Amino acid sequence: MTRSGPKKILPKGEKRGQKKGRDFSNLRSARVKFQQKLNCPIQRKCGSCSYVNESYPVLAAKKYKRAVEKIGEIISLENVRSIPLELSPEVKGYRTSVKLAVRKSSITGSLEIGLFSPGTHQIVSLEDCYIQHPEINKLVLSLKTLLVESGLSVYDEEKHEGVLRYILVRISRSTKDLAITFVVTNRSSYSQLREVAKRLKEAHPIACAFLNVNAEQTNRITGLFSKKLIGQDTIKENLCYFDLRVSPLSFFQVNPWTAEKIYGRVEQLVGKTSRPGAVAWDLYCGIGIFSLVLMRQGYQVVGVEENPHALKDAEENAKRNFPSVVSCFKEEPVEKFIDSQTVSSGLFSKPEVVIVNPARTGLDVAVIEKLLETKKKSPSLELVYVSCEATTLARDLKLLTEGGFTLRQLECFDMFPHTEKLEWLAILT
Image 1 (spheres, one colour):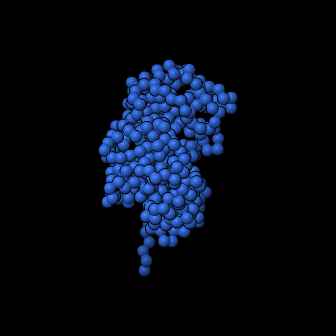
Image 2 (tube, one colour):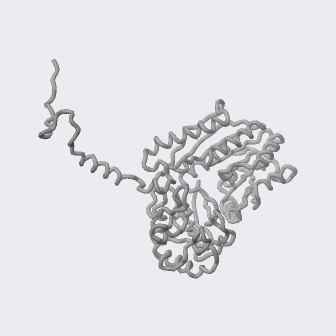
Image 3 (cartoon, helix red, strand yellow):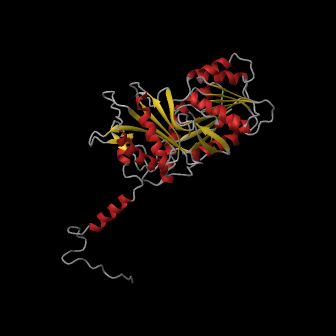
């Protein structure tokens, strides 16, 4: 014998199982409330964050799986130790460095600060971005008002007219100080932008502000000439217990929480050298954090970087943190440096460890060839490859392993939560 609960009482005139005429107002109301709870209401317009309104751990695991499969199509991972994805400690407001376009809205004609919508040159205003640091969001709101009041003309790409093109903002995780760079087409706006920077400083912790000139009709954001508007030359930062200085136009990872994990992991993997005078190369060194990691492990380091701002920062950071350690920093393309080292017999010509951290385009074939030559001369050479692009990483790993290296380990870190991007760490011996 079975018991049945009380029958559901249907609205008058409605038969059981009948759907027509039901009241769906509560469902619509629930849907509206759900939409109001979205992390980012402009996700579809912006297009930068594919998964910002989804479960972070679930979607991070899915993009990691897709990326590993993509790498596996190019190079075998059968005998490679793979470390599970390291999630980001911060998933909201983690982005401490942004490059924002300044344009007039094609619809309203008003000044907008933000990113281009995918496949277009229509600006999506980023006044309250979920992944931007909250202090940067506040700054963008103030900027919009002050720039309108300043009367500065906004750049028009089709006509190649107007002054203000882009705004670069960086915030220090440790001090919360801000660095701002205005990218313009000429120097005539110096006085106006200096006044804007002064007024911004009244309400925001602006440590330094710069004017950068890019008069070229190009997609490149910054130009070669920069001039300080107010404040210091750099902002202070602290990562892995290093006292750092970072110039506004130097490369610095956008997510310092995850970046710190990567630097720490590389230091752990490289380990302390037991040989006095052991040499290491830090290629594409940026402001020199990997160089500092190597110095702390007892290596004499040569860092190579073609960005003059970053190279200067690297030199200063080395002197500040390890004044007694032998180091050398060269401002030149990696291709030029490594080519000269194959015929050199100087102090830094025989590295035991090489760290490469190239742009997303990966390593030039010439660099790979010279690394392979170096490996033949020094069979014990260890190569650490840090990359933000799975496809070019796999391409380069294939060439390196075919030429003499062995891929031992592959690790992955989520440097860019809610996006398709990941940061990779490969160990080759």
